Length: 308
Image (cartoon, rainbow, N blue to C red):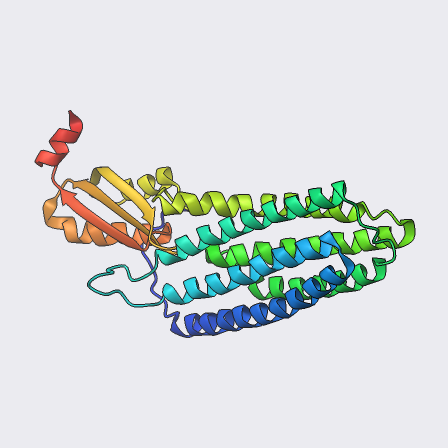
């Protein structure tokens, strides 16, 4: 993040409209495809008694819920503010992200429980390798397509990134289930099935941890991960006329928008409007779209108290 004075305004209205339409399509297609796959995988998981298929179906069901919640968050973020909700429902996107992470942890607990049960009480599934292979192969295609739908927008929003990571992880999980099916088919080692279930649980925990930690951080108004306070301070102090700053706070309004409040000490109060506008342009470049600045002179009471 560089501090570049001056800000060129561009009209992104058409691009934003296309992005909204594209993401709505991605969510809709992803939800429908994954719901169909969950139904198929659950059916064959019950028929074969495969914990690999059942655990993967449970994981995919939690991802369908995640996609639905993420789509809701995507739309909540675009509801206009009211007198009772002055930021609109943008904070809901953070709560959705946190809920998604918790749902995945619940799915992990279920998978571990089922896998351990099948290890203790093994089921002979040596004749079911072909079924496991073909069902999981369908999963590779569906999860891969869904991940691809979110790939280009994954860095723009935490919920979209979460959807992409879940689908990408699911693709790897389905590949592992195919591998287990091949091993079972040619070796008869049915123990591989619950072992794969445990490996799936590990993959989910790894892919979910970042989403969970970031969501918790934003939910308790921590500084967003994409904001470096030292660089923000450098940008503020680089504006001509700024002497110092204090009482600076940064938090997330949503998974895509950040806010800041700060007291800015300037040499010339008469130039405060120009200085304020310049600071806001610098902060916009730094990823902070909402800035509330209180301009003070070096002789202000607040400034003197901060020096003591």
